[in-house]
Length: 615
Image (cartoon, rainbow, N blue to C red; front, side, top):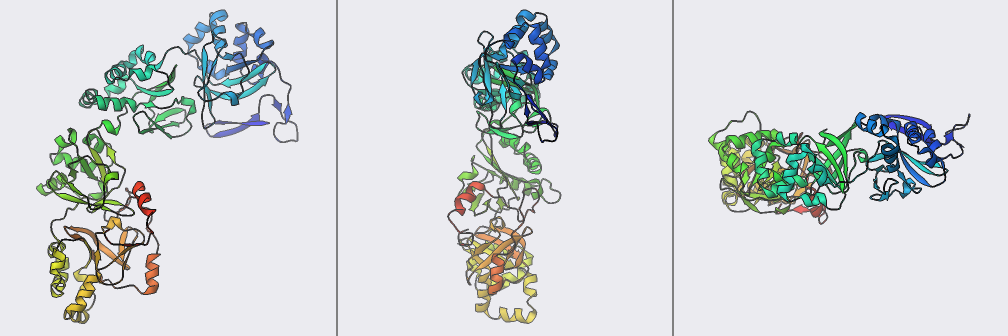
Protein backbone atom coordinates (compact mmCIF):
# COMPACT_ATOMS: atom_id res chain seq x y z
CA UNK A 1 0.00 0.00 0.00
CA UNK A 2 1.37 3.46 -0.91
CA UNK A 3 0.30 6.97 0.09
CA UNK A 4 0.82 10.30 -1.68
CA UNK A 5 1.83 13.41 0.21
CA UNK A 6 0.78 16.76 -1.27
CA UNK A 7 2.83 19.82 -0.52
CA UNK A 8 3.48 22.91 -2.63
CA UNK A 9 2.34 21.12 -5.81
CA UNK A 10 5.01 18.42 -5.51
CA UNK A 11 3.58 14.89 -5.21
CA UNK A 12 5.76 12.22 -3.66
CA UNK A 13 4.89 8.62 -2.90
CA UNK A 14 6.00 6.67 0.15
CA UNK A 15 4.86 3.54 1.89
CA UNK A 16 2.07 4.05 4.36
CA UNK A 17 3.06 3.26 7.95
CA UNK A 18 2.88 -0.48 8.56
CA UNK A 19 3.65 -1.44 4.95
CA UNK A 20 6.87 -2.13 3.05
CA UNK A 21 8.00 -2.51 -0.53
CA UNK A 22 8.80 -5.87 -2.08
CA UNK A 23 11.52 -5.79 -4.75
CA UNK A 24 10.07 -6.21 -8.21
CA UNK A 25 6.49 -5.46 -7.19
CA UNK A 26 4.51 -2.25 -7.45
CA UNK A 27 3.49 -0.24 -4.42
CA UNK A 28 4.02 -1.41 -0.88
CA UNK A 29 2.26 -4.76 -0.61
CA UNK A 30 4.01 -6.15 2.48
CA UNK A 31 1.95 -5.60 5.64
CA UNK A 32 3.94 -5.51 8.88
CA UNK A 33 2.62 -6.93 12.16
CA UNK A 34 0.72 -4.44 14.37
CA UNK A 35 2.45 -3.08 17.46
CA UNK A 36 1.15 -1.18 20.49
CA UNK A 37 0.38 2.57 20.39
CA UNK A 38 3.71 3.55 21.94
CA UNK A 39 5.67 1.76 19.23
CA UNK A 40 3.17 2.85 16.53
CA UNK A 41 4.09 6.45 17.34
CA UNK A 42 7.59 5.67 16.16
CA UNK A 43 6.37 3.80 13.09
CA UNK A 44 4.23 6.74 11.93
CA UNK A 45 7.03 9.27 12.52
CA UNK A 46 5.52 10.99 15.58
CA UNK A 47 8.79 10.54 17.48
CA UNK A 48 8.46 13.73 19.52
CA UNK A 49 5.08 12.60 20.86
CA UNK A 50 6.66 9.23 21.61
CA UNK A 51 9.50 10.93 23.53
CA UNK A 52 7.14 13.15 25.54
CA UNK A 53 4.93 10.13 26.30
CA UNK A 54 7.91 8.45 27.90
CA UNK A 55 8.92 11.58 29.84
CA UNK A 56 5.37 12.04 31.14
CA UNK A 57 5.29 8.39 32.21
CA UNK A 58 2.51 7.66 29.74
CA UNK A 59 4.50 4.90 28.04
CA UNK A 60 3.29 2.10 30.28
CA UNK A 61 -0.35 3.09 29.74
CA UNK A 62 -0.16 3.15 25.94
CA UNK A 63 1.88 -0.06 25.82
CA UNK A 64 -0.57 -1.96 28.01
CA UNK A 65 -4.05 -3.36 27.60
CA UNK A 66 -6.89 -1.13 26.50
CA UNK A 67 -8.40 0.40 23.40
CA UNK A 68 -7.39 4.00 22.86
CA UNK A 69 -7.52 6.67 20.18
CA UNK A 70 -4.43 8.90 20.19
CA UNK A 71 -4.49 12.17 18.22
CA UNK A 72 -0.71 12.37 18.04
CA UNK A 73 0.90 15.73 17.14
CA UNK A 74 3.49 15.48 14.40
CA UNK A 75 7.11 16.46 15.07
CA UNK A 76 6.46 19.71 13.19
CA UNK A 77 3.45 20.43 15.39
CA UNK A 78 5.58 20.30 18.53
CA UNK A 79 8.26 22.45 16.89
CA UNK A 80 5.64 25.11 16.01
CA UNK A 81 4.42 25.38 19.60
CA UNK A 82 5.35 28.74 21.18
CA UNK A 83 8.44 28.39 23.36
CA UNK A 84 6.76 29.63 26.52
CA UNK A 85 3.98 27.04 26.21
CA UNK A 86 6.37 24.19 25.49
CA UNK A 87 8.60 25.23 28.41
CA UNK A 88 5.59 25.23 30.75
CA UNK A 89 4.70 21.70 29.66
CA UNK A 90 8.12 20.11 29.87
CA UNK A 91 8.98 21.82 33.18
CA UNK A 92 6.13 19.91 34.82
CA UNK A 93 6.00 16.62 32.95
CA UNK A 94 4.08 14.68 35.57
CA UNK A 95 1.13 17.05 35.57
CA UNK A 96 1.02 19.60 32.71
CA UNK A 97 2.59 17.46 30.02
CA UNK A 98 0.67 14.34 31.07
CA UNK A 99 -2.61 16.30 31.11
CA UNK A 100 -1.85 17.73 27.68
CA UNK A 101 -1.17 14.26 26.25
CA UNK A 102 -4.26 12.79 27.89
CA UNK A 103 -6.33 15.53 26.21
CA UNK A 104 -5.14 14.06 22.89
CA UNK A 105 -6.56 10.62 23.86
CA UNK A 106 -10.02 9.06 23.87
CA UNK A 107 -10.62 5.88 25.85
CA UNK A 108 -11.99 3.92 22.88
CA UNK A 109 -10.95 3.06 19.34
CA UNK A 110 -12.29 5.58 16.78
CA UNK A 111 -11.56 5.18 13.09
CA UNK A 112 -11.77 8.19 10.80
CA UNK A 113 -15.09 6.89 9.50
CA UNK A 114 -16.49 7.17 13.02
CA UNK A 115 -15.30 10.77 13.38
CA UNK A 116 -18.57 12.34 12.27
CA UNK A 117 -18.97 16.03 11.48
CA UNK A 118 -19.99 18.01 14.56
CA UNK A 119 -19.38 15.15 16.96
CA UNK A 120 -17.40 15.43 20.18
CA UNK A 121 -15.80 12.85 22.45
CA UNK A 122 -14.73 12.92 26.07
CA UNK A 123 -10.95 12.95 26.28
CA UNK A 124 -8.90 11.23 28.97
CA UNK A 125 -8.18 14.63 30.58
CA UNK A 126 -11.03 15.29 33.03
CA UNK A 127 -13.51 14.18 30.35
CA UNK A 128 -12.94 17.48 28.50
CA UNK A 129 -14.33 17.04 25.03
CA UNK A 130 -12.45 17.11 21.74
CA UNK A 131 -14.47 18.44 18.83
CA UNK A 132 -14.57 16.76 15.42
CA UNK A 133 -15.32 18.26 12.04
CA UNK A 134 -15.46 15.99 9.01
CA UNK A 135 -15.83 18.23 5.95
CA UNK A 136 -17.34 17.37 2.60
CA UNK A 137 -13.92 17.67 0.94
CA UNK A 138 -12.71 14.73 3.08
CA UNK A 139 -10.67 16.79 5.54
CA UNK A 140 -11.08 15.81 9.19
CA UNK A 141 -10.10 18.04 12.09
CA UNK A 142 -10.01 17.66 15.84
CA UNK A 143 -10.13 21.04 17.57
CA UNK A 144 -9.18 22.45 14.14
CA UNK A 145 -6.02 20.30 13.98
CA UNK A 146 -6.01 18.38 10.71
CA UNK A 147 -5.61 14.60 10.61
CA UNK A 148 -2.64 14.20 8.27
CA UNK A 149 -2.07 10.46 8.82
CA UNK A 150 -5.35 8.93 9.93
CA UNK A 151 -6.16 5.35 10.87
CA UNK A 152 -2.77 4.05 11.94
CA UNK A 153 -3.87 0.84 13.67
CA UNK A 154 -2.22 -0.55 16.78
CA UNK A 155 -2.79 -3.65 18.86
CA UNK A 156 -4.37 -1.55 21.61
CA UNK A 157 -6.06 1.20 19.65
CA UNK A 158 -5.51 3.60 16.79
CA UNK A 159 -3.30 6.60 16.11
CA UNK A 160 -4.27 9.64 14.03
CA UNK A 161 -1.32 11.98 13.39
CA UNK A 162 -2.44 15.64 13.56
CA UNK A 163 -0.71 18.80 12.42
CA UNK A 164 -0.81 20.73 15.70
CA UNK A 165 -0.90 20.37 19.46
CA UNK A 166 -4.50 20.81 20.65
CA UNK A 167 -5.65 22.44 23.86
CA UNK A 168 -8.78 22.12 25.95
CA UNK A 169 -11.69 24.45 25.15
CA UNK A 170 -13.60 26.07 27.99
CA UNK A 171 -14.79 29.50 26.81
CA UNK A 172 -17.52 30.40 24.34
CA UNK A 173 -16.69 32.90 21.60
CA UNK A 174 -18.12 35.87 23.50
CA UNK A 175 -15.82 35.10 26.45
CA UNK A 176 -12.82 34.98 24.10
CA UNK A 177 -13.75 38.39 22.67
CA UNK A 178 -14.38 39.79 26.16
CA UNK A 179 -10.86 39.06 27.40
CA UNK A 180 -8.91 40.13 24.29
CA UNK A 181 -7.93 43.82 24.26
CA UNK A 182 -7.29 43.63 20.49
CA UNK A 183 -11.04 43.10 20.03
CA UNK A 184 -12.27 45.94 22.22
CA UNK A 185 -14.01 47.85 19.40
CA UNK A 186 -15.63 44.65 18.14
CA UNK A 187 -16.84 43.87 21.65
CA UNK A 188 -18.46 47.33 21.88
CA UNK A 189 -20.05 46.91 18.43
CA UNK A 190 -21.57 43.51 19.28
CA UNK A 191 -23.06 44.96 22.45
CA UNK A 192 -24.48 48.00 20.61
CA UNK A 193 -26.07 45.72 18.00
CA UNK A 194 -27.52 43.37 20.59
CA UNK A 195 -25.71 40.37 19.10
CA UNK A 196 -23.76 39.11 22.12
CA UNK A 197 -26.30 36.33 22.66
CA UNK A 198 -25.32 34.72 19.34
CA UNK A 199 -21.74 34.37 20.57
CA UNK A 200 -22.87 32.96 23.91
CA UNK A 201 -25.47 30.46 22.69
CA UNK A 202 -24.92 26.94 21.44
CA UNK A 203 -23.94 26.66 17.82
CA UNK A 204 -21.08 26.04 15.44
CA UNK A 205 -20.26 29.43 13.95
CA UNK A 206 -17.21 30.99 12.32
CA UNK A 207 -16.43 34.59 13.28
CA UNK A 208 -14.00 36.71 11.30
CA UNK A 209 -13.13 39.11 14.08
CA UNK A 210 -11.91 42.57 13.00
CA UNK A 211 -9.20 43.84 15.33
CA UNK A 212 -9.09 47.40 16.69
CA UNK A 213 -6.64 48.15 13.87
CA UNK A 214 -9.22 47.02 11.28
CA UNK A 215 -11.80 49.47 12.61
CA UNK A 216 -9.23 52.29 12.69
CA UNK A 217 -8.60 51.90 8.93
CA UNK A 218 -12.20 52.93 8.14
CA UNK A 219 -12.85 56.69 7.63
CA UNK A 220 -14.29 58.12 10.83
CA UNK A 221 -17.39 59.46 9.06
CA UNK A 222 -18.23 56.04 7.61
CA UNK A 223 -17.54 54.21 10.86
CA UNK A 224 -19.60 56.62 12.97
CA UNK A 225 -22.49 56.39 10.51
CA UNK A 226 -22.55 52.59 10.71
CA UNK A 227 -22.04 52.45 14.49
CA UNK A 228 -24.94 54.90 14.88
CA UNK A 229 -27.29 52.92 12.64
CA UNK A 230 -28.48 49.70 14.36
CA UNK A 231 -29.65 48.12 11.08
CA UNK A 232 -26.39 48.80 9.23
CA UNK A 233 -24.33 47.75 12.26
CA UNK A 234 -26.20 44.46 12.59
CA UNK A 235 -25.69 43.74 8.90
CA UNK A 236 -22.00 44.57 9.14
CA UNK A 237 -21.40 42.26 12.10
CA UNK A 238 -23.52 39.41 10.70
CA UNK A 239 -21.46 39.69 7.50
CA UNK A 240 -18.46 38.60 9.60
CA UNK A 241 -20.18 35.43 10.86
CA UNK A 242 -20.52 32.21 8.85
CA UNK A 243 -23.42 29.88 9.53
CA UNK A 244 -21.07 26.91 9.86
CA UNK A 245 -17.79 26.29 11.62
CA UNK A 246 -14.83 26.42 9.24
CA UNK A 247 -11.39 25.64 10.60
CA UNK A 248 -8.52 27.01 8.55
CA UNK A 249 -7.44 23.48 7.63
CA UNK A 250 -10.79 22.78 5.97
CA UNK A 251 -10.20 25.39 3.28
CA UNK A 252 -8.62 24.05 0.13
CA UNK A 253 -9.88 26.52 -2.49
CA UNK A 254 -12.01 29.62 -2.87
CA UNK A 255 -15.49 28.66 -1.76
CA UNK A 256 -18.55 30.92 -1.29
CA UNK A 257 -19.84 30.53 2.26
CA UNK A 258 -23.10 31.96 3.53
CA UNK A 259 -23.05 34.52 6.32
CA UNK A 260 -25.69 35.33 8.90
CA UNK A 261 -26.24 38.57 6.96
CA UNK A 262 -27.54 36.51 4.04
CA UNK A 263 -24.84 37.08 1.44
CA UNK A 264 -21.65 35.10 0.93
CA UNK A 265 -17.95 35.47 1.65
CA UNK A 266 -15.37 33.70 -0.45
CA UNK A 267 -13.02 31.87 1.87
CA UNK A 268 -9.94 30.43 0.22
CA UNK A 269 -6.22 29.92 0.51
CA UNK A 270 -3.15 31.37 -1.14
CA UNK A 271 -0.20 29.10 -0.44
CA UNK A 272 -0.25 28.65 3.32
CA UNK A 273 -2.32 31.80 3.88
CA UNK A 274 -6.05 31.76 4.40
CA UNK A 275 -7.85 34.42 2.34
CA UNK A 276 -11.14 36.24 2.60
CA UNK A 277 -12.73 37.62 -0.58
CA UNK A 278 -9.34 37.08 -2.21
CA UNK A 279 -7.38 39.05 0.38
CA UNK A 280 -4.82 37.65 2.82
CA UNK A 281 -6.16 39.67 5.77
CA UNK A 282 -6.36 36.90 8.37
CA UNK A 283 -3.76 37.47 11.08
CA UNK A 284 -4.62 34.72 13.57
CA UNK A 285 -6.46 31.48 12.88
CA UNK A 286 -8.48 28.89 14.75
CA UNK A 287 -9.17 30.48 18.11
CA UNK A 288 -11.59 27.85 19.32
CA UNK A 289 -14.61 28.40 21.50
CA UNK A 290 -17.17 25.92 22.70
CA UNK A 291 -19.61 27.19 20.06
CA UNK A 292 -17.35 27.95 17.12
CA UNK A 293 -14.08 29.28 15.87
CA UNK A 294 -12.65 32.80 15.56
CA UNK A 295 -10.22 34.00 12.89
CA UNK A 296 -8.75 37.48 13.45
CA UNK A 297 -8.67 39.89 10.47
CA UNK A 298 -6.98 43.27 10.02
CA UNK A 299 -9.55 44.73 7.59
CA UNK A 300 -13.21 45.44 8.22
CA UNK A 301 -15.65 43.82 5.80
CA UNK A 302 -18.49 46.18 4.90
CA UNK A 303 -21.43 44.52 3.12
CA UNK A 304 -23.33 46.39 0.44
CA UNK A 305 -26.37 46.49 2.70
CA UNK A 306 -24.51 48.84 5.08
CA UNK A 307 -23.24 51.18 2.35
CA UNK A 308 -24.43 54.48 0.96
CA UNK A 309 -25.02 54.87 -2.76
CA UNK A 310 -21.68 56.64 -3.14
CA UNK A 311 -19.87 53.81 -1.32
CA UNK A 312 -21.55 51.25 -3.61
CA UNK A 313 -20.33 53.14 -6.65
CA UNK A 314 -16.82 53.61 -5.31
CA UNK A 315 -16.47 49.85 -4.89
CA UNK A 316 -17.48 49.09 -8.50
CA UNK A 317 -16.13 49.51 -12.03
CA UNK A 318 -17.96 52.79 -12.56
CA UNK A 319 -15.25 55.30 -11.62
CA UNK A 320 -16.12 57.80 -14.38
CA UNK A 321 -19.82 57.78 -13.54
CA UNK A 322 -19.03 58.22 -9.84
CA UNK A 323 -16.82 61.22 -10.63
CA UNK A 324 -19.53 62.79 -12.77
CA UNK A 325 -22.26 62.23 -10.17
CA UNK A 326 -20.12 64.08 -7.62
CA UNK A 327 -19.17 66.88 -10.05
CA UNK A 328 -22.87 67.27 -10.90
CA UNK A 329 -23.53 68.21 -7.27
CA UNK A 330 -25.43 65.03 -6.43
CA UNK A 331 -23.32 64.00 -3.41
CA UNK A 332 -26.07 64.74 -0.89
CA UNK A 333 -28.35 62.30 -2.72
CA UNK A 334 -25.60 59.69 -2.87
CA UNK A 335 -24.74 59.84 0.82
CA UNK A 336 -28.16 60.43 2.37
CA UNK A 337 -31.05 58.22 3.36
CA UNK A 338 -33.26 58.74 0.30
CA UNK A 339 -34.73 55.68 -1.40
CA UNK A 340 -33.06 55.87 -4.81
CA UNK A 341 -31.68 53.74 -7.63
CA UNK A 342 -28.55 54.81 -9.47
CA UNK A 343 -28.08 53.81 -13.10
CA UNK A 344 -24.28 53.78 -13.30
CA UNK A 345 -22.72 53.35 -16.77
CA UNK A 346 -19.55 51.31 -17.05
CA UNK A 347 -16.35 53.29 -17.57
CA UNK A 348 -16.04 52.25 -21.21
CA UNK A 349 -19.50 53.64 -21.95
CA UNK A 350 -18.01 57.14 -21.81
CA UNK A 351 -16.20 57.96 -25.04
CA UNK A 352 -13.46 60.57 -25.23
CA UNK A 353 -12.93 63.27 -22.63
CA UNK A 354 -16.00 64.09 -20.56
CA UNK A 355 -16.39 67.45 -18.85
CA UNK A 356 -19.12 68.78 -16.63
CA UNK A 357 -21.54 71.06 -18.44
CA UNK A 358 -25.14 72.07 -17.66
CA UNK A 359 -26.34 69.39 -20.11
CA UNK A 360 -24.09 66.76 -18.52
CA UNK A 361 -25.33 67.77 -15.06
CA UNK A 362 -28.91 67.31 -16.23
CA UNK A 363 -28.04 63.96 -17.83
CA UNK A 364 -26.42 62.61 -14.66
CA UNK A 365 -29.46 63.73 -12.63
CA UNK A 366 -31.57 61.61 -14.96
CA UNK A 367 -29.40 58.57 -14.14
CA UNK A 368 -30.92 58.49 -10.63
CA UNK A 369 -34.40 57.03 -10.18
CA UNK A 370 -36.55 58.19 -7.28
CA UNK A 371 -37.27 54.75 -5.75
CA UNK A 372 -35.04 52.00 -4.41
CA UNK A 373 -35.63 49.15 -6.83
CA UNK A 374 -34.57 45.61 -7.64
CA UNK A 375 -34.00 44.65 -11.27
CA UNK A 376 -35.96 41.47 -10.55
CA UNK A 377 -39.09 43.57 -9.95
CA UNK A 378 -38.92 45.50 -13.23
CA UNK A 379 -41.44 44.73 -15.97
CA UNK A 380 -41.90 45.56 -19.64
CA UNK A 381 -43.48 48.96 -20.20
CA UNK A 382 -42.81 50.18 -16.67
CA UNK A 383 -41.91 53.86 -16.28
CA UNK A 384 -39.30 55.06 -13.79
CA UNK A 385 -39.21 58.68 -12.66
CA UNK A 386 -35.79 60.30 -12.31
CA UNK A 387 -34.59 63.07 -10.02
CA UNK A 388 -34.61 65.26 -13.12
CA UNK A 389 -38.32 64.60 -13.65
CA UNK A 390 -37.99 62.38 -16.74
CA UNK A 391 -39.86 59.12 -17.20
CA UNK A 392 -37.57 56.25 -18.29
CA UNK A 393 -39.08 53.17 -19.92
CA UNK A 394 -38.26 49.57 -19.06
CA UNK A 395 -37.87 46.99 -21.85
CA UNK A 396 -37.76 43.28 -21.08
CA UNK A 397 -36.22 41.02 -23.73
CA UNK A 398 -35.26 37.37 -23.87
CA UNK A 399 -31.59 38.06 -23.34
CA UNK A 400 -31.62 41.41 -21.61
CA UNK A 401 -33.29 43.90 -19.32
CA UNK A 402 -32.97 47.48 -20.52
CA UNK A 403 -33.88 50.96 -19.34
CA UNK A 404 -34.17 53.08 -22.47
CA UNK A 405 -31.01 52.31 -24.51
CA UNK A 406 -28.97 51.12 -21.49
CA UNK A 407 -29.10 47.46 -20.45
CA UNK A 408 -28.23 45.91 -17.11
CA UNK A 409 -24.57 44.84 -17.20
CA UNK A 410 -24.06 43.36 -13.71
CA UNK A 411 -26.00 42.14 -10.71
CA UNK A 412 -27.72 44.74 -8.53
CA UNK A 413 -25.92 46.28 -5.60
CA UNK A 414 -28.37 46.93 -2.79
CA UNK A 415 -27.26 49.47 -0.19
CA UNK A 416 -28.68 50.64 3.12
CA UNK A 417 -31.26 52.93 1.53
CA UNK A 418 -30.51 52.89 -2.20
CA UNK A 419 -29.55 50.49 -4.99
CA UNK A 420 -27.20 50.63 -7.95
CA UNK A 421 -27.76 49.14 -11.39
CA UNK A 422 -24.62 48.93 -13.51
CA UNK A 423 -25.59 49.61 -17.13
CA UNK A 424 -23.68 49.20 -20.37
CA UNK A 425 -24.35 52.62 -21.91
CA UNK A 426 -24.89 56.23 -21.00
CA UNK A 427 -28.62 56.89 -21.09
CA UNK A 428 -29.94 58.92 -24.01
CA UNK A 429 -33.43 59.88 -22.82
CA UNK A 430 -35.93 60.59 -25.62
CA UNK A 431 -36.37 64.27 -26.48
CA UNK A 432 -39.05 63.97 -29.15
CA UNK A 433 -40.93 61.70 -31.52
CA UNK A 434 -39.32 59.48 -34.14
CA UNK A 435 -39.99 62.25 -36.66
CA UNK A 436 -38.33 64.81 -34.38
CA UNK A 437 -35.24 62.59 -34.07
CA UNK A 438 -34.95 62.26 -37.85
CA UNK A 439 -35.45 65.97 -38.52
CA UNK A 440 -32.77 66.86 -35.99
CA UNK A 441 -30.14 64.70 -37.72
CA UNK A 442 -28.69 65.84 -41.08
CA UNK A 443 -27.95 62.22 -42.03
CA UNK A 444 -31.69 61.65 -42.54
CA UNK A 445 -32.63 64.66 -44.71
CA UNK A 446 -33.53 62.48 -47.72
CA UNK A 447 -35.48 60.11 -45.45
CA UNK A 448 -37.48 63.00 -43.98
CA UNK A 449 -38.44 64.07 -47.50
CA UNK A 450 -39.37 60.51 -48.40
CA UNK A 451 -41.58 60.18 -45.30
CA UNK A 452 -43.41 63.37 -46.20
CA UNK A 453 -43.84 62.21 -49.80
CA UNK A 454 -45.22 58.85 -48.60
CA UNK A 455 -47.68 60.59 -46.25
CA UNK A 456 -46.21 58.92 -43.14
CA UNK A 457 -45.38 62.00 -41.05
CA UNK A 458 -48.36 61.55 -38.75
CA UNK A 459 -47.51 57.86 -38.20
CA UNK A 460 -44.06 58.79 -36.90
CA UNK A 461 -45.39 61.58 -34.69
CA UNK A 462 -48.26 59.73 -33.03
CA UNK A 463 -48.05 57.74 -29.82
CA UNK A 464 -46.89 54.16 -30.12
CA UNK A 465 -43.84 51.91 -30.02
CA UNK A 466 -41.95 51.61 -33.28
CA UNK A 467 -38.49 50.42 -34.25
CA UNK A 468 -37.25 52.26 -37.32
CA UNK A 469 -34.22 51.00 -39.23
CA UNK A 470 -33.72 54.40 -40.80
CA UNK A 471 -31.84 54.63 -44.10
CA UNK A 472 -29.31 57.45 -44.12
CA UNK A 473 -28.67 59.74 -47.07
CA UNK A 474 -25.84 57.36 -48.05
CA UNK A 475 -28.34 54.50 -48.19
CA UNK A 476 -30.62 56.37 -50.59
CA UNK A 477 -27.75 57.62 -52.73
CA UNK A 478 -26.47 54.05 -53.06
CA UNK A 479 -29.67 53.19 -54.96
CA UNK A 480 -28.55 55.33 -57.91
CA UNK A 481 -30.22 58.51 -59.04
CA UNK A 482 -32.56 56.86 -61.53
CA UNK A 483 -33.95 54.31 -59.06
CA UNK A 484 -34.20 56.95 -56.33
CA UNK A 485 -36.15 59.31 -58.57
CA UNK A 486 -38.47 56.50 -59.64
CA UNK A 487 -39.11 55.57 -56.00
CA UNK A 488 -39.79 59.14 -54.97
CA UNK A 489 -42.33 59.58 -57.79
CA UNK A 490 -44.39 56.60 -56.55
CA UNK A 491 -45.76 57.35 -53.03
CA UNK A 492 -47.40 53.92 -52.75
CA UNK A 493 -44.22 52.00 -53.53
CA UNK A 494 -42.20 54.40 -51.35
CA UNK A 495 -44.58 53.84 -48.43
CA UNK A 496 -44.19 50.08 -48.79
CA UNK A 497 -40.40 50.34 -48.73
CA UNK A 498 -40.41 52.59 -45.66
CA UNK A 499 -42.96 50.46 -43.82
CA UNK A 500 -40.71 47.44 -44.33
CA UNK A 501 -38.09 49.40 -42.33
CA UNK A 502 -40.54 49.98 -39.47
CA UNK A 503 -40.96 47.21 -36.89
CA UNK A 504 -43.83 46.73 -34.49
CA UNK A 505 -42.71 47.24 -30.92
CA UNK A 506 -39.63 48.73 -29.28
CA UNK A 507 -36.38 46.88 -29.90
CA UNK A 508 -33.16 48.50 -28.66
CA UNK A 509 -29.82 47.02 -29.70
CA UNK A 510 -29.36 45.27 -26.35
CA UNK A 511 -32.51 43.26 -27.00
CA UNK A 512 -31.17 41.70 -30.20
CA UNK A 513 -29.91 38.14 -29.82
CA UNK A 514 -28.14 35.90 -32.30
CA UNK A 515 -31.51 35.12 -33.97
CA UNK A 516 -34.26 37.69 -33.44
CA UNK A 517 -37.29 38.36 -35.64
CA UNK A 518 -39.27 41.56 -35.87
CA UNK A 519 -42.63 42.01 -37.66
CA UNK A 520 -42.50 45.01 -40.00
CA UNK A 521 -45.53 47.20 -40.70
CA UNK A 522 -45.49 45.82 -44.26
CA UNK A 523 -43.88 42.61 -45.39
CA UNK A 524 -43.27 39.25 -43.77
CA UNK A 525 -40.40 39.66 -41.32
CA UNK A 526 -37.08 41.25 -40.48
CA UNK A 527 -34.27 38.92 -39.44
CA UNK A 528 -31.87 40.37 -36.87
CA UNK A 529 -28.65 39.08 -35.37
CA UNK A 530 -25.43 40.19 -33.73
CA UNK A 531 -21.96 39.49 -35.10
CA UNK A 532 -18.73 40.93 -33.78
CA UNK A 533 -20.76 43.24 -31.55
CA UNK A 534 -22.63 44.77 -34.49
CA UNK A 535 -26.39 44.44 -34.99
CA UNK A 536 -27.50 43.27 -38.45
CA UNK A 537 -30.96 43.43 -39.98
CA UNK A 538 -31.44 41.29 -43.11
CA UNK A 539 -27.63 41.24 -43.46
CA UNK A 540 -27.42 45.05 -43.31
CA UNK A 541 -25.26 46.37 -40.44
CA UNK A 542 -26.69 49.00 -38.12
CA UNK A 543 -24.36 52.02 -38.35
CA UNK A 544 -25.70 53.85 -35.29
CA UNK A 545 -28.03 52.17 -32.82
CA UNK A 546 -30.46 53.42 -30.21
CA UNK A 547 -31.53 56.95 -31.15
CA UNK A 548 -34.33 57.06 -28.60
CA UNK A 549 -37.70 58.70 -29.24
CA UNK A 550 -40.85 59.06 -27.17
CA UNK A 551 -42.71 56.74 -29.51
CA UNK A 552 -39.95 54.42 -30.63
CA UNK A 553 -36.28 53.93 -31.37
CA UNK A 554 -34.26 54.74 -34.48
CA UNK A 555 -31.34 52.64 -35.75
CA UNK A 556 -29.41 54.19 -38.62
CA UNK A 557 -28.58 51.87 -41.55
CA UNK A 558 -26.36 52.73 -44.52
CA UNK A 559 -28.27 50.54 -46.99
CA UNK A 560 -31.91 50.23 -47.90
CA UNK A 561 -33.16 46.96 -46.40
CA UNK A 562 -34.61 44.38 -48.74
CA UNK A 563 -36.30 41.04 -48.03
CA UNK A 564 -33.89 38.12 -47.89
CA UNK A 565 -34.13 35.36 -50.52
CA UNK A 566 -35.35 32.09 -48.96
CA UNK A 567 -31.85 30.56 -48.86
CA UNK A 568 -30.33 33.63 -47.21
CA UNK A 569 -33.35 33.86 -44.95
CA UNK A 570 -32.39 30.53 -43.44
CA UNK A 571 -28.71 31.48 -43.33
CA UNK A 572 -29.53 34.69 -41.51
CA UNK A 573 -31.59 32.83 -38.95
CA UNK A 574 -28.92 30.23 -38.32
CA UNK A 575 -25.82 32.31 -38.97
CA UNK A 576 -22.84 32.56 -36.64
CA UNK A 577 -23.77 33.82 -33.22
CA UNK A 578 -22.01 36.71 -31.55
CA UNK A 579 -18.96 35.85 -29.45
CA UNK A 580 -19.57 35.80 -25.71
CA UNK A 581 -20.02 39.39 -24.63
CA UNK A 582 -18.46 40.72 -21.46
CA UNK A 583 -19.03 44.03 -19.75
CA UNK A 584 -15.33 44.82 -20.00
CA UNK A 585 -14.68 44.00 -23.66
CA UNK A 586 -17.76 44.73 -25.72
CA UNK A 587 -18.50 48.03 -27.39
CA UNK A 588 -21.04 50.38 -25.87
CA UNK A 589 -23.45 50.35 -28.82
CA UNK A 590 -24.11 46.60 -28.64
CA UNK A 591 -23.06 45.30 -25.25
CA UNK A 592 -25.37 42.74 -23.69
CA UNK A 593 -25.81 41.07 -20.32
CA UNK A 594 -27.91 38.02 -19.62
CA UNK A 595 -30.11 38.38 -16.59
CA UNK A 596 -30.08 34.70 -15.56
CA UNK A 597 -33.32 34.73 -13.59
CA UNK A 598 -35.16 36.60 -16.31
CA UNK A 599 -33.65 34.50 -19.10
CA UNK A 600 -34.61 31.21 -17.46
CA UNK A 601 -38.15 32.45 -16.78
CA UNK A 602 -38.80 33.71 -20.29
CA UNK A 603 -36.93 31.18 -22.38
CA UNK A 604 -38.85 28.24 -20.93
CA UNK A 605 -42.08 29.62 -22.32
CA UNK A 606 -40.98 30.64 -25.79
CA UNK A 607 -39.03 29.24 -28.69
CA UNK A 608 -35.89 31.15 -29.63
CA UNK A 609 -37.34 32.08 -33.02
CA UNK A 610 -40.77 33.35 -32.04
CA UNK A 611 -41.91 36.54 -33.82
CA UNK A 612 -41.62 39.49 -31.46
CA UNK A 613 -44.13 42.31 -31.43
CA UNK A 614 -44.18 44.35 -28.23
CA UNK A 615 -40.52 43.70 -27.56
